[in-house]
Image 1 (cartoon, rainbow, N blue to C red):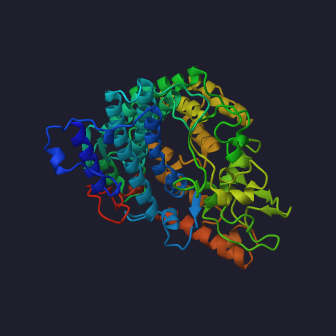
Image 2 (cartoon, rainbow, N blue to C red):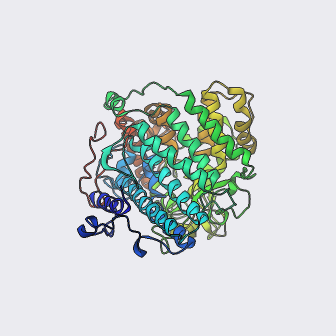
Image 3 (tube, rainbow, N blue to C red):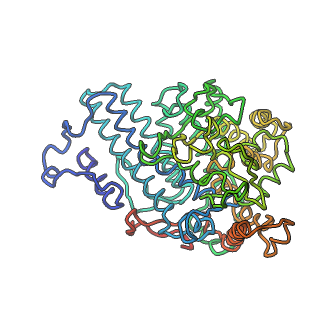
Length: 555
């Protein structure tokens, strides 16, 4: 496919999926011209900086998704419930496992990921043209195309993890409507990330800039999900209407690749764990300001007024600070709520001294503005998702909900260590897994083990990464997703007699709040089905049919 036809194909693809309404194509005369392969000033960039800037435009399609991933990945779990607006709003709908093809967060994420893919394709063609005529250097090409392919590979990885078989199209061609097999999608992910690894430079301390080690870490992530044999369309169909999880199986050769790529990151010596877990989250700790090199890949945010959309992680989990009905305050729902006290209580019962617990779940906070203490456990409220509350600077608890400027962490070095440990355990090499596994436990101040079990690995993902947008994805690959959601039946406010069974005394406002908690816990338990191993193939951004068939089972 020549360059002009490639550009026309991409624009047609964008139009078909309403992903890029402002794109322009060449005319029919150009298509029939003898100069189809001609490179002109209109399809090149002038220098290396312009090449990188062109690729940086792809981030405009990642920025709106930073908090949206939480609604799909965490709200659709036993960990989080959503009270964002009325009960028919997208957040509460997903929280109750009632999502449909028209549900906004599914529409938003799916379309913007494909939009990022399409813009990466377009950028790669332009940069290839530019190298061909000598307007950029090989170094400029490597930096720009390496970044474009890393972002494209990451987009396809998110798509296959959440939607399964999806269309695959690149600068070389493809279809925006024909769904490819799981293995074909992963082949594209691996190809893109491997190419990015070869083109990008070593990590230089700036996690906003994709690096060789970021590509390697994403390869380890991809091989782990692929190695756990993701369900095919027909396998989802078989369980779509049931509350039965499928059997867990693995492909050992892919798990060996996990260890290989994790070791590349570890052996580079470029990354390390921050000695203080509590310093990983917040505006003043982003972009490696502490120089500890744990943040490996982040999505930059400067706030609503400056980028495509600020990171609303803080806003969503801390929408109405210190409004829990205490100290004369009103009781007002946050957009996302920790599902129930049990998530804190169960962890505390197991490891009360785990240094991560106090950062992950806030149960008591002092308002820096009035000096008063507020409690976040029943009967007052549910605990607060601590990772969504920036406490890195003075009065951050009150201000960051409007700034929305905390960078989203896509990759931490801790993931590389735990990913390696898990792959080794799945391969039956449990004693080898102890070294990377225990690095996390030592930082947390809890006991180390000589040979972690698979169940300990799973629990460690909770300890280290709760509310970091991995829950649904992990349980889907472990094939215990339904069982994990059904855990809500053990929570304090699940049973119909919750008001008397908890032993608490509730006032009118508290009773209303926990009635909502009860409703969502019951809905999760009653509604979750095998079909929720996949998200519904959504409509386009304007509500139109994207032409991608077949729809995922059960929707």
